[in-house]
Image (spheres, rainbow, N blue to C red):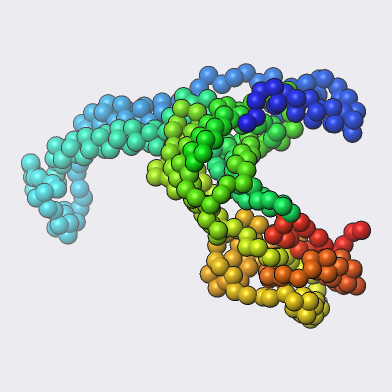
Length: 379
């Protein structure tokens, strides 16, 4: 749980570290709570939601006087030429002839039908307004945190432990990217209660738009079923957390003030290693195959994996690791995953020592089920 005193202490450390690196900055530049402070802008009279509400209400109430004003104009509509009228099929349900002038073929539209239509439009607009307000705000406009909170389950891997963590961030962006979400957490046996209480505006601002965030450590939970509450202050949500050997699942009904990145996160199996080989010349693909063969020779087993999202990597429906070249920083990318129960030091030596022979052509990196990471570049 992040208390206000802890947040203040962290902000002080951040400010001290910043000044050590960049020296103390002029107060007329940095002594503001957010990136807009130096502009001296006045607060808007109406918020976005209020402005939209006024617009919808104005549209609804203006339909009646507008209709009455145009009614007298539209009551007398003359259609020319006469032979055109013969080509237009008129249904009794839609129009009624109230007067016919044989010279000018004057038709007067029955506006009682239009009055009914206008009433239906008004009713539809009113219902849309009511439901849109309920769906959009969901009580958030009156909540201390006026934003949905997006929650992602992560299993943090370490050499001797696995800890379940909820990474949480607001859907809304704030003017300082280091604003934390304050929480109150209670855990008693198989019952977990987490309440997001507020967003703390720190004295020191990392000037960049971004969400407020927090990480909630649930520690090492034994396999089982847990009752869990995730409350966005006054907006209550009750569900069940399932922890098994293979999955971590959050099952809620309808939610209010919170959203989940995904309901189920797969757990990284024991003795599992995954990684990527990036390269910029297509001809280097033969070197990739050569190095992957070294893994196999060392005892790595390349099996089909269980599909799903493991947070650290994703397995597609065919059981292969998903590779996204576009955001990798390389022209070409080969991702891999395997199981290995041999001496990890030999595997590390293969990447960090033997791999350096390929460093001009290949960029090799590996993550492990123990939360470690090693590559073939650097020292």
